[in-house]
Image (cartoon, rainbow over all chains, first blue to last red):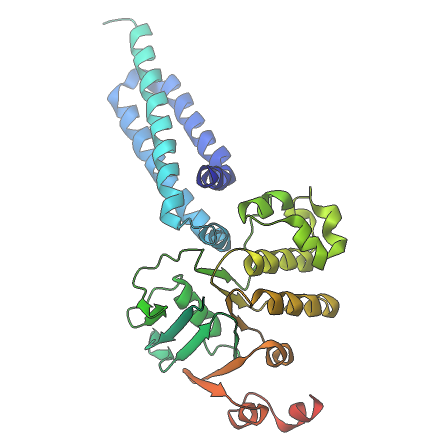
Length: 109
Length: 224
């Protein structure tokens, strides 16, 4: 329980930025969804890129805070791994749901 | 039960500059070990290597005689106070104490003026007050060894004296390794002192060794 609480605390420090990126992706797919798979591929790699930038920035700017978690038994890997899996799965689930809904509502050619 | 922490065979190089090459350090339950050294001699690097934050190939770190290979450190065995503030600023004081399984009343026995801060966020405290909380949670939480990097910086003299009392109380149950440029306090509280100079550690027997090895000059020693 304590481990989960600590991981959530760490996630909170950049979750707003991550959700903002996901929201931008949804806007783009809503706007350009009729372009089919191309926009999905672009957004997939865009999300990967922003996650990589997030990891780098947090590792640099919050490097001292990792000692807090390490002193409580959580290494960097133990913090990042569950967060990245959750964040990316959330993005993928929402993306696929939105894309399939758009596909159903589009007029068939 | 006594526990032992030993470090040797460390070689640390940055490009062509060898920072650490002939280091031996030993600490045990019930003892405070001090590390002194000029700026840039590798005191912080040595602590980071012991804590697993700085990964190098050539090192030998042993807890109770058993070598430690991985960079993971069980906090029940070793905790580390880094030089800079490390607690996330948005956390409340009560949450920090809960995370470290510490009783806030135990803390306010040493620092009664902090009792009003229980529900405060860390970011609302001054730099010195933040440091006191950091020092306390590392010193007082359950562990067999703790390392303190520059604990006395930014702390007012009255509180330095209280921190020295906490160190003396806590060393009954753990081993403490400490480094600071305020060498008078290190000399005062440590059972053993090592001087780090040109990559090597020297066990200091008396204050004259600090002059011989170029850490102090005679006028400073007379003033002590």
